[in-house]
Length: 164
Length: 89
Image (cartoon, rainbow over all chains, first blue to last red; front, side, top):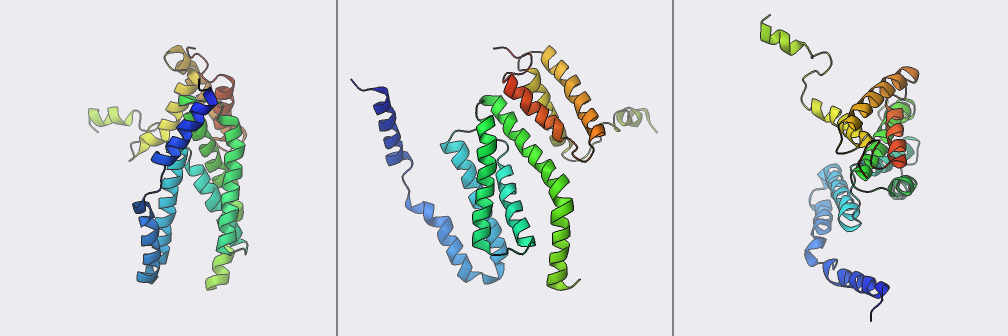
């Protein structure tokens, strides 16, 4: 007789072995990205935006497809990371890799804090909770951060960079 | 001004016709339905009054934070009663 945890772990291993196996064509976006770095050196800003969008779509697939969490507020984490890196850069910390790590850590902290509260619900209620969290972060970003921090810092940056 | 245009202008102050105007109101519809509870008429009716009054009141009390409190209120009510105020079990 097979106990319940054995069945669960067997199913999980099965899923990892078959469904979640890496396939060769999944390396295609990254190969294109590396190739674009050398082929189109004038379009690196556009390439970076495309890469960020690919990562954003993949992260939604991670949450929705693999973890099964139905969410309308996924952009909250995108925005949290972007604001973290943006505020750091505007205040003189322009190093990209550490900014990336700080952005990921900040978005993870927001996800951990809100997830601990709202992941107790399911269905439409969970959908609404994620939407509400994202809406609250939008108001915080517009009301508190944009006016007082980012706008002034952005003006300082423009003055320093281009002298206008 | 023709009669038809007059009829259109009747609600234009409250719900102006702009591209994508429904998306802004969709959030309020979702809040009203989820707070009120699925599958009832009385629930969303009460929730619409509650959300509308609370939203306007909080926007008067703290204009800087705008609609922040209505989202916090929605979150609190849904944590307290996940099926809404009048939702069926």
